[in-house]
Image (cartoon, rainbow, N blue to C red):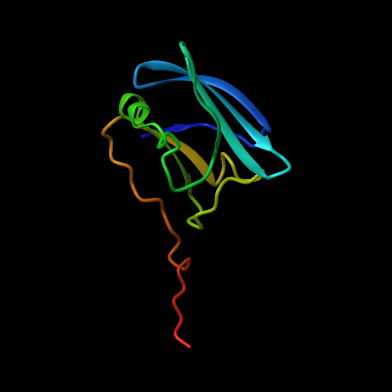
Length: 120
């Protein structure tokens, strides 16, 4: 598991090595929808375009071949509230992690008091 550092900058362009290959990322904030999106490319071209960044699922899930070849990208809300990234929490509470092919993905942390089951 490797954290891919992000910030709340509205446009982030960077490159990093994953599983021995070089990848190019663009993360953008859509202000109108308060939604972050992800573009990902390798040296041969675009792999993902405008993927919504939400917690709780593999961002490469739409392409099983890509997942088998590259691995998985997951957003986790470390506050335990299960929130998707906002203009204020990307890179601080909501973090992007890379998992190599076959690496186990842990369940995201959840605050103990998040699930408050009261009987009335």
